[in-house]
Image (spheres, rainbow, N blue to C red):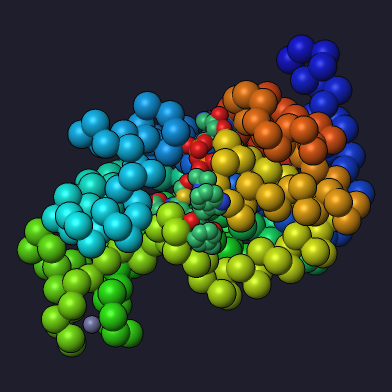
Length: 247
Ligand code: BV8
Ligand code: ZN
C-alpha cells in the first residue's frame, strides 16, 4: 500500500472512530464491481440512448414501450448481481454507530441484500413497479410480459418505482436524507460523480455545518473539493481496508 494511501486511510479511520453519528451517501460506483453499469460510464448507454434521456417522464409519455424495454433489461440484469465487498463493509459498519444513515442513489437493492438496514433509497427501487395514477403496486419480478404493462385496477400504465429526472424525490426519503445531513458528524461519500441534485449537494451542506467528509472514488469529483480526505481506489477494496482500520 503506498504511503499516501495508508496515511489517508488512517485519517479517514480516525474520523470514523471518533464519531458516533455517521452518514453514508452512495452512488452507482459502489455497485460497479457487482457488474451493475454506472450511469455515466460506458454502461450509461442503452442502444445508443443515454440513461439520462430515458429516465424521464417525458420519455415514458412519448415512448413507454422503449422505456419499459430499458427498465426490463435492467430489472432482468439485477437477477444475476450480488453485493460486493464494498456493500458488505458498509453493512458491517452500521451496528457500530448509535445513529447511522445509508443514503443511496442506487436503485439496485444491493445494500439491503448485503444486510444494511438503515437504507434510504433516494431514487426509489427497480424491485418495485407502481401505477402511474392509483395506489396499485407490485414486485417488478411479477410483472406481466406485456411490452407496456397496465394497471389491473385502473388500466393506466404501470411504471418502475424509481425517481426520474424532473420528478420530486419521495418525501420520506428526503426527510431521512435531511436528518442525515443535519445530524451526522462524518459523511462517507462512495462512488458518485456528484452531478445529480439534490444528492450532489449533501456533502457540501453537511460540511457547512461542521461534519467531516470522506470520499471514496476512482477519480476526483466535485465532491473532492469539500472532502477532508479522498481515498482513490475501488470501493470494493478501499471500504474493507477502512473498516479494518476502524478497529
Ligand atoms: C429533483 C433513478 C426537484 C432512475 C436517478 C439543473 C438543470 C436541470 C435539472 C436540474 C438542475 N438541477 C437539478 C436538476 C434536476 C435533476 C438533476 O440533478 N439533473 C442533473 C443531471 C443536472 N434532479 C432531479 O430531477 C431530481 N429531482 O431535483 O426534484 C426538481 C424537479 C424539477 C426541476 C428541478 C428540481 C431527481 C434525480 C433522480 C434521477 N434518477 N436514478 C434510474 O436509475 O433509472 S439518478 C441516477 O444518477 C442514478 O440513481 C445514479 O445513481 C445517479 C447519480 O449518478 P451516480 O450514482 O453518481 O453515478 P455515475 O455513473 O454518475 O457516477 C459513478 C461514479 O462512481 C463515478 O464518479 C465513478 O468514478 C465512480 N466509480 C466507478 N466505479 C467505481 C467508482 N467508485 C468507487 N469504486 C468503483 N469501483
Ligand atoms: Zn392504477
